[in-house]
Image 1 (tube, rainbow, N blue to C red):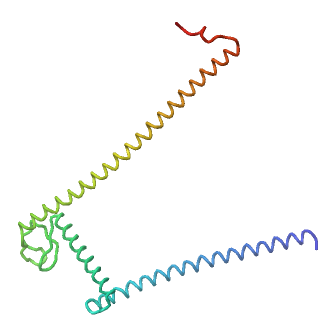
Image 2: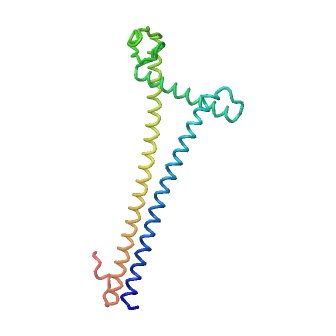
Length: 199
């Protein structure tokens, strides 16, 4: 077999190897993608199973672990509802006690069902109180951010001062070394440096 035949066979086998490797990589990518999609589907099915179980077993299951989780869910739902009420209050709106429709606190009747709004003074007072609480919270957060910024600025200034001192020290040392070198050179040349001193 000649040299050209061997070269042709080598190129051919190399090409087949590269093609095979490419197919393996492509197949691996597709399978990994499929595994990821199936895993995500399982997670969604598990979520749905948990939701169905919660709805059917709430107040029924005697399992203490399950009851603890149910209690956490109820507490979280209550906190969400309370936060929603606070948002409505800050926006100056309330919910109709009859149909749940959104109302402005200045509306006397619900636009959806006509039910009279209640607790005018309490609603207005609560709006003021909640707004003040939010402002206070924001002020505390802003103060904390300002304190952190000031501390960072002070640290940066300290670092800059240290850097300047180091640079000045290096410059002074360099200048001193230069003067010593000049004096040494003059001494080597037989020149007395005191002759050049003024005064």
